[in-house]
Length: 465
Ligand SMILES: Cc1cc2nc3c(=O)[nH]c(=O)nc-3n(C[C@H](O)[C@H](O)[C@H](O)COP(=O)(O)OP(=O)(O)OC[C@H]3O[C@@H](n4cnc5c(N)ncnc54)[C@H](O)[C@@H]3O)c2cc1C
Image (cartoon, rainbow, N blue to C red; front, side, top):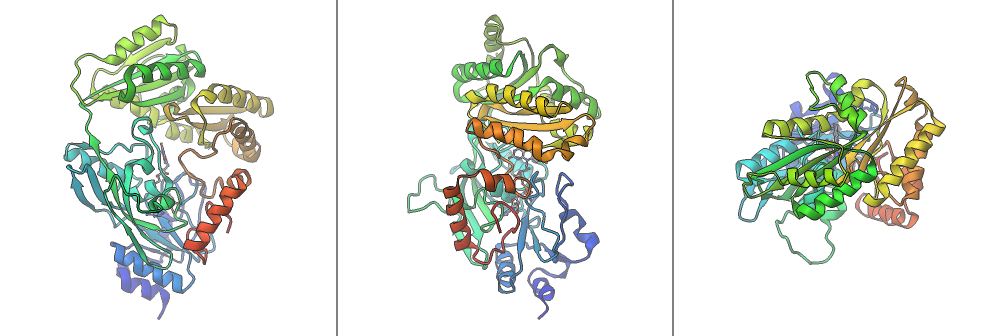
């Protein structure tokens, strides 16, 4: 039987796309940098269909690239240009199967869009705290496969910390059912963690049980100007000591990142003159009680007295709070509009960040005097998007290798990681293979060989082929 016909029999002819026009949107990544070709785009609607597709692909040595929301910034869900791979899109597996407010869990199919999961939780009076700028497109399967981070890691952890159970289809079509909502389960190795951050190289995540939390009733947000990254770190320490688990977000942004948002994003007004301070922190506190007075206001008054803070704008309504967050979340788009920006997504111990930022900015300027870095990120969990643009824009890309070397050299010197949350994909594979501890790589390769001996799952990503 013809292979395409075999896939059509599993999912129906309308869900096997072979026409290049129909496939087009699946074959380019969000950054428009990685382009590929596919034998077919196949869109299953159930675990059973995924299992049959994987078995058929495996029997015929067909590589499989899983794609969810296709918002990977590292070319993770884009096939290579051989045209041999099957692109498995989970967009039809978009059901929220169960919300359990007693167990505080939600069972979802992998193609559920993150924003829909947040809305379903909220409709049941619960919070699903994973949140980031691509939440209207990214899907739970993609979030789990990349162990996504986002804006609330400080309080709730990464995606890995939010997942209790998983269902995974292996390379040969066998289904591993670990779909349990247990908070304690010490029956041997916790295999679900193998598939989180595996970037589609070990199996296809089809369903998950995720944790829910009480919905905050009071949220206080402030945009706070500080003189240096060191002061921002000291402010973070003060906020954490004073408010404990109430601090849900602590973002850091260069003033020029905010100014660029004002310039590049239509209808975006800035809440104050951000040129009065070189760095700004977006701080969010949230409480399950109804509080009339903002604890942030009192806290910042003390910080002013201690000369930790230069200026601050506090939100007075949900609308203003959303506006402050939308400024932070528009930075990647504003950078993209401005043209040419090399993304870096690094993590360091928070205490190392001031020295890292100072040294890296200086080293970049010494070697590439035309650089225009855009430094922002989730300071509260030690994660910086240390992006590098240039004036004029395209020059950064022409010097990509040298720029990344400067940034990664400083990351390694400070014992950090070259990927905090976006993963490795195609973009960072060469550097990952060069910089990762060789014994860790050996163990990863052994696991890959066990679960995908034919090397069919997402070739060209993460590990060496
Ligand atoms: C504007 C913007 C802001 C972003 N901000 C953040 C942020 O703050 N934090 C963060 O962590 N990320 C961020 N990202 C990156 C991206 O959104 C995340 O990596 C997200 O988790 C990817 O989800 P997705 O559904 O789009 O996955 P895709 O891009 O479709 O896939 C990502 C990887 O996972 C694999 N995969 C997808 N689905 C499955 C599955 N069901 N089973 C197995 N493997 C699978 C793919 O093969 C690929 O390797 C941002 C992206 C954009 C565009």
